[in-house]
Length: 453
Image (cartoon, rainbow, N blue to C red; front, side, top):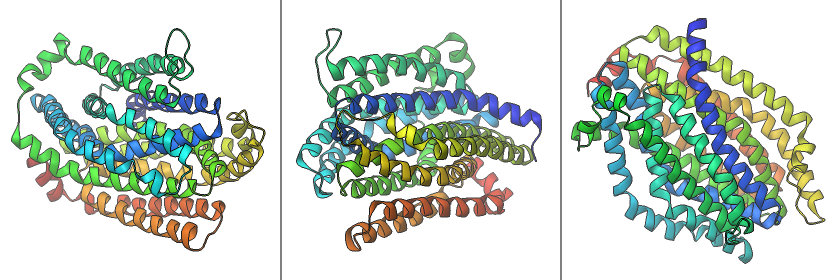
């Protein structure tokens, strides 16, 4: 069970992260909404290019984002001077991975052609993708700094910085897409460029908070700007599995998405719209996941397992309650939600019809998402990253194999493919929940050894 104090603390910590992640979701949502004002092809291209970009940086982002748990563990054990040193090591990782990301960009851009997309869609996807990849360093830097502030429980800083970025992004992207207010008309490239500029602006806001006098003195910020081999080794040892986990999950999801889009433009547009609404559930839950990781890391660092159990219970209450309400909305208003993205063409009816059926599957798996994100946040905060990596890789690989068979071998329709994806998420939730309820990750010797390294 949980105490009201723990529930209140988690809610206080999670709310700014939910707002922050929702701000990011709003940015993506409006980009695709702007694309819908052009045509269905632009919606599908923005989804394909955007998800491929995320896959391309997912491994490095997963490694760097482990700063949340690492900083929280140092913070919980009272080692404040080590907290900003984590940021320095993360920035070093972000810089060193840039040559690899250049190679990744050149290879990943060929996926659109290999998946059989139409030439006109491939051209748009590549434009969107390459602009985002040009700003990948800034995306990783922003991830590192945001993870740091989450780790020291300063989630309001994350909220203020990210919301500021969105306030800049939405009008800027609109201007660059449609060529208004003196801006050039760049179409889909404008949407990507607006995102990059907003990311750089957000980093500037974070820097203001990071270098304030009070923060500099408490955490010895200026003394932290050095290579710390001990922290870097621990960062990589625990962060690499998180990176592989995020990469495999993102890669299999992207390949599934690209395979699904091979059904046609209507099917691709329907999926893009459904996943846009999925962000209403998933992205705020990511904020909850980060908050749970931070709190679990701090209490594990302090050796307080009783409070750890309370955090888990409180996390499930908040996440499942939120997802259940959204599930009802997705079921009862699915047709109206599809019509929000109606394109100028006369044939939006088939897109809306398929998408409204897919919304039922979305309503089915949102509760699974809640379980997955609370459980993974807990296990990641406790350093159980190797198990998360192995399990996630196995289940996602099985899902992808199933999708190849269904789409390319058996030639089943989009609904069969969609429900296979839903079943995979339900299975992953059950496996994660089983691990969470066990005692392996709670072993005192394992936790003590992890904290001493």
